[in-house]
Image (cartoon, rainbow, N blue to C red; front, top):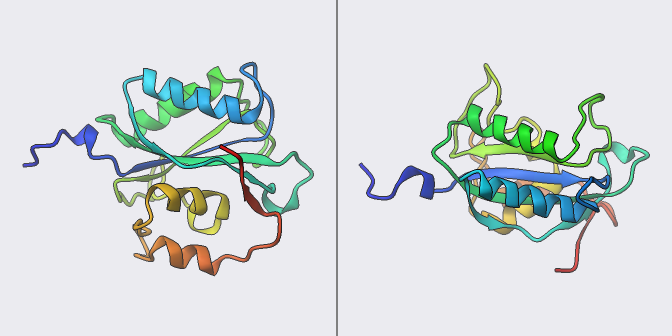
Amino acid sequence: MSAIPSRLKGGIYVALGANLASVIGPPRRTLEEALARIRRSGVDVLDVSPWYETRPMDDRDQPRYVNGVAELATERDPEALLELLHDIEEGLGRQRRLRWESRTVDLDLIDYRGLERTSRPPLLPHPGAAERLFVLLPLNDVAPQWRHPVTGQLIDRLIRALPRRHGDIEPLDP
């Protein structure tokens, strides 16, 4: 038995993204407010990556996104954590109409302490995480030794395997 409370162990990673203004303000400000709401809910935010500006997936005709990743620690199970994330999205004006549409905020549970789950939500690790540079680069900032729970591949190898074009992802000023 560990002497460290499980909620302090971390290893829970959430990707944050937005490309529309919310009632809070522009995307970056909305994401910072999402982190504040996570903290106020009793979930520890252990680390946050720098913010990145990214091209929309598949070159969709949308504004560019602001993306980042946070490492969390909580005693909540994955279902309860996902419910919290969805509640925060809703409180910040997220409307779910079409897949991959522009959004005021998107909070995706990427990894929950290496748990593998394919039968019920939340699917873990997040099914698209390994193919998304806008998830992997900020994840690398907070967890450079992270391994994909299913494939065992180190994050730097996953990043190198992805195609990259000029302007796909750029760090934002602090």
